[in-house]
Length: 137
Image (tube, rainbow, N blue to C red):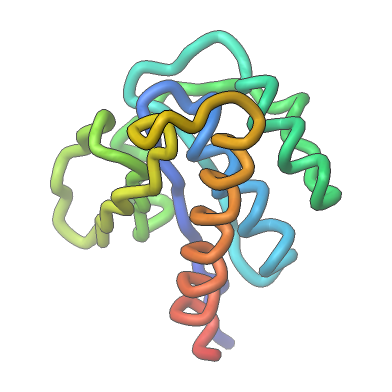
């Protein structure tokens, strides 16, 4: 019997990018991958625009609550994906950590919903690639 792969998505506030990545992985992989998310300095709520652009794909993250990253979370997942450069996580023996330098449209003057759609689409492409690696195809 093989164990189900797990991934923990992390960003600073756990209100936008990591929540989006978790929702998109659940959409893509269903129950084949255990998915969690956390933040290094969690905010108080999920970003409204993040939830809105995911709802366009049938993914509901509006009821999620940002939570603090713990070493136990990292060890339990075994595979940690850090979205962006703001969040810094410790290196732990036996835990794979990869950093996704995600697209930041605001650096090109793109804001609001248009920005969030571009962020979502960048994360979605990366999630599909990660799902392929985790599930072997």
